[in-house]
Image 1 (cartoon, rainbow, N blue to C red):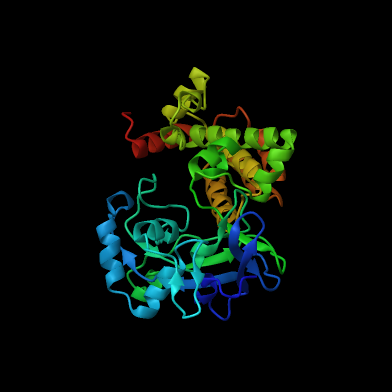
Image 2 (cartoon, rainbow, N blue to C red):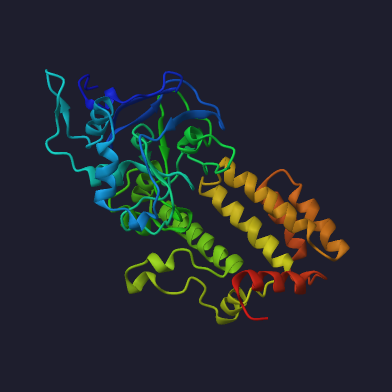
Length: 362
């Protein structure tokens, strides 16, 4: 380990079970110093500064004005963020040359409203508040991360310090010495390997991408699952969450090609039984890809339970509730298939409600 690397000057909280060190093929990263249990807090960090604008409206001048207000010790931390290239000189100064503050901001900021996935300067996520987080930005990306930065709460009663902070949690058990990773982008669960690399603008070397590059069968199955996830999201919401970000004809084809199913999705015209099955199949595929994190699993279970309770036909409601109460997602899906093709007394009213939300004329 390079004892003089500037990253070692970053203010990692003493309680955090992590250390910064070089990682094979990925520059510096964050590694666990002890075993971390699933759901445990890894680190909480306050933003060095916050810019309150939509991401696409943030300018270099906004960044410069925010940086000008920082103290000398804070500016030293900013200098440490100029990439893997800089080196600390014997006099304590940083050998990094002129600082590209816009680049530092773009590579080290996080949305305070929806966690780590969004990044500014042309990215598609539009948020109102962004913060610079020197320590959290040291996590490397993985397409199958073992940690996450959940949505930061926005409540009027919360202190300004709390509102300007973000936290990371273990999404599964992490062993001592293991690298801790997060996902840099929204929508990756429904992206194939090539699509992910195109959006990241670098060749990801995470465990899942590395295995996919060596095992064609694994890659084919993984890409198929993620394409199915994309299709299920369309059937449930009538929105292809990825198509508007594709920049070539080969990836702009509709994810649902069948005109009848596509029309039904566009018009929110699926019965409750189909929606419950799609919800559960989506969870099964997401889990199979190693992407069903704690927050997503909890939110999904709450969602499908409410869906089960909304059935109007008593027999359907009993089956739906029993299905959701099974221990595993695959068991829940298996039992829910008993509802396949069944109409329900509440179908009409739920279709109306979905259409109203989407602004479809009734």
